[in-house]
Length: 499
Image 1 (cartoon, one colour):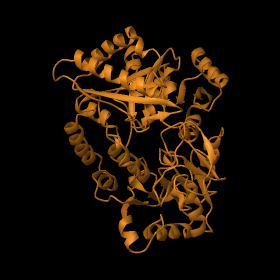
Image 2: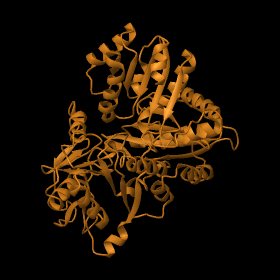
Image 3: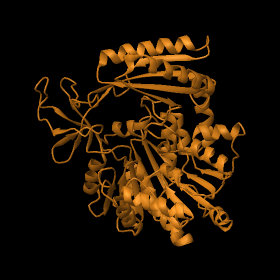
Image 4: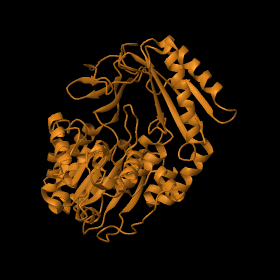
């Protein structure tokens, strides 16, 4: 209705969505309302196709552009409205230089062009909610689902107890019972796993050796067809039968992946029609649309997938959602891990019971007492926000404080280490006493990618402008010192990921 109002005034609108996977359902809704005055843009389009859509926008042939963060740069001459759907999603932050956030760019563009920005989320980012509390944004609350449906009933399954009772399956007893019940009732089920691939890593149970990529500081993942793959540089090799270090035959993959869950579900429920949606099944053009259309037409009973299946989809016949290994994202080396876990679980729960029938959700976890999981089960955003902000305040993390990451990369590890130390000392010298906290330099969680080494320095301050001033000093220092010539240095404010 807002877009219709804007178009009636002769203006145009941009609708940002976080995932290509959401394009199919979103675009169908908009086409039904606005016809061919709608266009889409995403990374799956060829350069020529993207150019054509931008040209249509420039000529005024369309009123609405839908797409991920790059749609922000649509050359509309009469922009009236920018909508950011699922505002909390990390994909709105660019991972390439310049590392902009779509939320900030949208606000800046709207300010310059006299347009409005509307952000929507059931689990707002802490930054957006904090901005509402500070009065920078206006908060509007939707107290009910659109069809007045009740929120789903959420149960937490403690997988430690399952193990004590002799259940070594990745599916809890309660989830199996409910899955059987839904299959008999001809209702649909979604199983969400925060992983891709057949197994997490290959490890020797005799000596503890983990098979790693020779070019990157990460373990290789096992895929079907006897291959081990590096998800950073694409390196592939054959699966090993014996440990390269101690020769033991007790070497194999750990942690279930979507393919393994698919095999298990087909064994447990041979009558079920199963779909799998992850990076591997959607890498071809149109892959998302085919799988989603099949599930929407109820040609499958169970959808198994990674994060892309729990973001904004609307399937009225889904009455059961199972979250497998809910805390897999909880203990990552990232200060946002609690927030991400809460958002993921709450969004996953939101896929159940969207039609006439009530929904149920099973969250399987080894950490049932963690506040992220407890609050997600209660779907209590404000309770979570209060707990998480106390932690951010205590540790000096955004949005309570400002954080700048300086990511340095180079092919010579010794030179990179020396340069990082010099840059840290300079940052301390140009900052006022006690104004900035400097952490590092350290190797990030992945210290080497494709034979290129990485170092990171973090700077914390209560004031954003203080960090901008220090960044400007550091850039000048880098320019006049030849030691930095063969290195790549990037500055990232309030990064979405700890490197």
